[in-house]
Image (tube, rainbow, N blue to C red; front, side, top):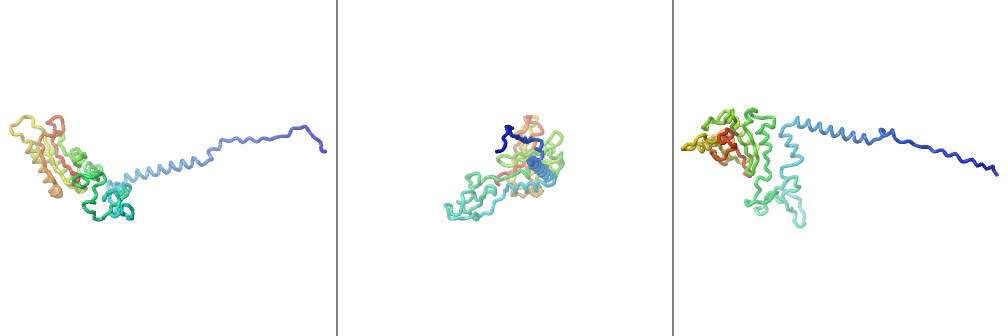
Length: 279
C-alpha cells in the first residue's frame, strides 16, 4: 500500500476579469453605418431640392403619391361582383383600384371617391391649385414680374375656387384714381395671370371692388367704376390669350364688400380673379 498523506490538495482558481475591451465589439459599427447612411440621404435630398425645378419636384411627388387615374379596366373574376369592384370609376392610383368599365353607363358612372352630389358628379374633388399659386406668388424662382409687383397679390382657396386678389397699396395703384384706366402695374399683373392660367383648365370669374367715397354723392359712381374695371381686366386677359369660353362672369361689387375696416383705405380697391371649381 502506498503511503498516505494528510496534505490538502492544491486548487488553482483562474479569475477572468471582463471589461476594457468593449470597444472591440461590432454593435457601434452598425449604429455608425446607419448614421452615415442617414446623413448621406439627407444631403442628397438637400441637393435635389436645390437642383430641381418646381415641375420636376411635382413629378417626383406624383411618382410616390400619384394623382392620375389607373388603367380604366379592372381584373375580373366570377365572384359576387362578377369582376367589378365597389369603388369609383375614377379612383386614383393611391386608392388601389381601377375602373370596372371603359364606357360606363349613366347609371354606373363614377360619382367621385368622396361621395355623390345631386348632379351626379364630383365637384372639384381632386383639384389642386398649388402649382398655379406657386407661380403667381413667385415661389418657383421663375417669376415673370418683379418683387415690387408681387406685393399686390394674395391668394386663397375657398369652396368656390382659387381666388387671386390684386389690390392697391399706399404707394402704387392698379387704376388711375376714379377711372378704369389700368396702370402699368395692373397690366403686368394681368399678363402674368394670363400666362399662368394655362396651368389649369378651370373657368374664370372677374370681380371688381372699390373703396368708399369720402363724401356722400347724389349719384354713387362706385358701381360703374367697379364694374368697368372688372370688364377692363377681362378684356386684357382675353387679349393676352385666355379663351373667351373660360371667362364665366364679370361682376362689380362697388364698395359693398370692403376688405379694410377703413372704408376709404386703398386696400379696398381690388380685383379678384377666381378660378372656379368643377368647371
